[in-house]
Image 1 (cartoon, rainbow, N blue to C red):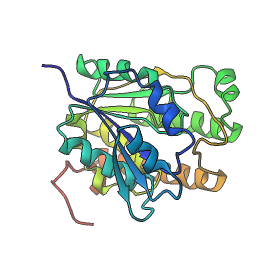
Image 2 (cartoon, one colour):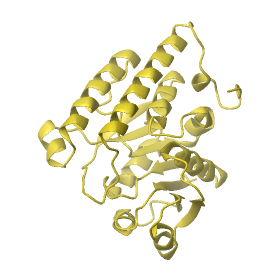
Image 3 (tube, rainbow, N blue to C red):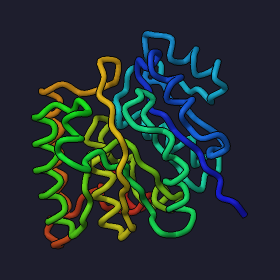
Image 4 (cartoon, one colour):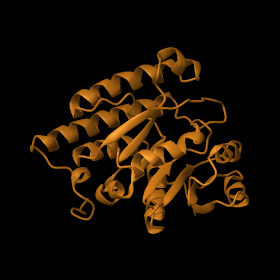
Length: 252
């Protein structure tokens, strides 16, 4: 039986890029596409409905992590076997979604990441700010050393998960902010899921969503904090709610 593939799009102010992102998704790769709008003030929801997407609205801005929580809740509720997250800001190449799904469906990976970092020249030519590139490389190196992984990038927003991953990881205990992504990958490593990555083109543009320097620094600091929590958990020094299986530990 073929796997049920659901693409989720955490959206905020994506009216200029949503349709381009959607048009690049190969026909037939997804059984359903869900867009969760985090209280945009533009026409994102109207365009999503016009394109035939399942549109779900947050009535107040709850944050990038909170948006993903809704995305995954809805995908699991709709019996998805494979969940692919594509940002609707046209930063990532949607044409590769079928490859992401195939790697999971064939049992090669539990999680697939789209790595924007193939060469330094290509990455910077895409428009990635130099400070983000340097921080990305440093954090990725540290994360690989601590976790024993060999990923080329830990900080991409283009990801695919098997259903089992999202049923196991207590993602509702994660932050509602951008560090949600770092937390989820460290949780996946802790629970022994197989993570792989493939190169993807990256496009930085004025209309694409991107956090500013201050938010990037906060993200980096919170990622380092999560790494410490991971280490303390692995060494049995201090337990964290981030690393308890879903439903096993619900206290704050």
